[in-house]
Image (cartoon, rainbow, N blue to C red; front, top):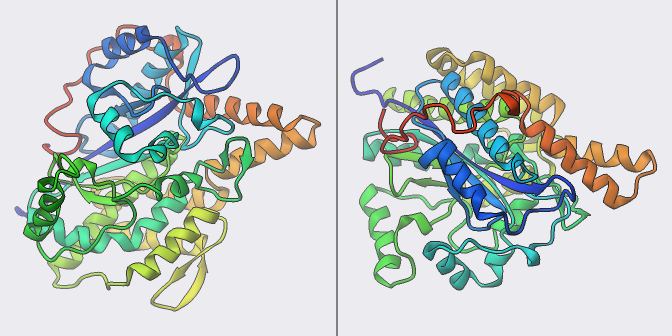
Length: 402
């Protein structure tokens, strides 16, 4: 490693939906005692989200994907144990199969009340969850140079993560309906290109000085320079139901970031493509996940995602070796071949219907599947310490300070 190489430390934020184990519907108003139990178990690593039916966790700063996996397993297990005390369970999916958005309540905090006031009905529809991955690049000019090159890969990461095929009891035909809901909100979508960090800060300051936003945390692009940490925050992905998929996508994003750094070190860079073209791949990923094709702009043709996965793996193999995450990068090929959470949810639903279940019964079967798969790879709930074993301090940033 050269002296000037970024640390590329990594951190992940996950958002879960809380469901009632008996009804399988969302818990629109969980008891306040749950928040107390979560804080006792996880301290500052767990926070409320915009809606009361949501919980967000944040890993500590991690230097390896092994640490990431351990953190995610501990966090998911702890949330599940706390929720179980109140007849609830977390599901790691970006939408609930049949819940009604109009029945949900926002968390009574100043930030969330402001969002509800500013976004109006759009905010009420935000019954969606995402996964955010931070990768630390300490040098700000370098961070923005890599930030400008990363959008090309965002549709690929979205395709690997899709977990929101249902909305209000309807099979939407999309693998990531979350993106349809989220895209209605201002300051979302692909990020613009910035020639320098100063240009970015001036742009944000226009909205801040106009009183439209308080700070850069109200900018919700698919990828953004973190407003709090020296990280590039990837936000396009759905929540992954399986931890293995989460870790693989996080490892891939980290390796892509370092691959672009390697190119820069050799006076090369990834070719720029228009937002128009990247948005087309974004749509294809939203619609079909890994089951169809994305466009290879260099070739000018649509390429099956499985082939693109092979190309991505080859592209970052040097970086996977550097970070010691070859197995996790190879898992990307498995996702491409076997499908994402959306594919599995659709299969569960179809199988239940074929067995004679009503649509509502089939949707509840999907919820049961999500409850179980969310904890796959975690320690059993009964083995999670009720008060939480000694929780590592959150550090100053999710992935900001090694």
